[in-house]
Length: 448
Image 1 (cartoon, rainbow, N blue to C red):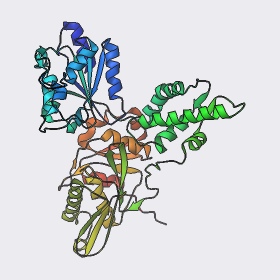
Image 2: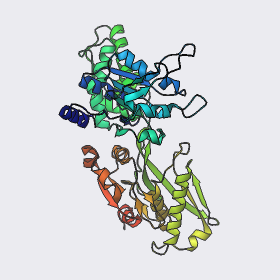
Image 3: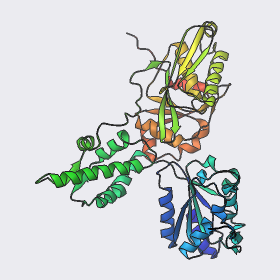
Image 4: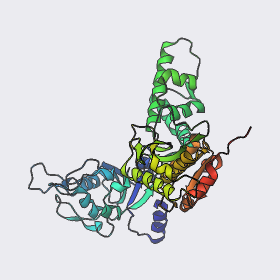
């Protein structure tokens, strides 16, 4: 979006600046990207954090009749930069407070962020229209759905996705390690981080979509290396940070990391989840026992996921004959669906296909391959509907050693945008319905 804007501006000499909005998980470089754009354009940069603002006067300013009145943040930023065309970063726009007795700050932003109106922005303090049309506004948000719809409609949305493991390693080697080495008074010759140690820090000491925690871990290693240099005589340089040193400096591993099943299991299917930290694999367990035809759901499931489980079971009941399942099994047994880990809340429709396959596996006593994971919403007719977060889900599958993922056919466009290393390590199979998934997942029993 920014490159297109610059190209057109160069051709025409005049163009209303677009209102860009970078959205994505924390620590993925949205604010840094804003700074880089200002640097590349040779413009002054101003950042204001909007998180927690609940007073409309913070945006529009206070009337001069009030004691201690002052201009709003927009005019304050313009005064501070002293130019009419700065790059103005509105940070955390999704965390602006809603309507209350002091007005609605998110509605006050509508005038600022509308290219058709902001040539005559009215601040209550200066009481004169001010031209903001030359300002390049950039907004950042973690959850774009939390931005009010009228405001979202004015923004040009650009997703800043979570980093792959390979990207995190490159960022650590190219930026974080040199930055923290210098900040802690070390030279390149004093310390050397091995790639395996960076990988260990990413997998076992941080759980994040971005690199903030990784930077803190690198900084911690540097500080401990400084202590070692100052307290040890004739120390051998550089200090090599390998896995052994990481465990010595950072202590026991904090995160075990999700692991796929080692052996084929009956009634256990690997789903894929999208979390605020990125993606993860989601094992789904199903069993049945003597009862009165009830459905038991455990694992702190949300309403949408509970509905998915009901749809999955009703689809299997309606098609029992097709899958060779005795119809009496539903009247005389209770079915229990559990999604570990029990204390972690889970929701969303994307586990529908996995739930259906797990129920069929349990009732037909067929084991499921642990090397295959799947994602997709299911309908009462057994169709596979598209899902979101495919990039993060496929990264998680690749990281956990999954060999193949089953994806709804309508997600074909998203697969084209996956990182090359993910496409290399994963076989991606498209499915239009439950039957397409069942053809892939079952392991034939071995005959002696």
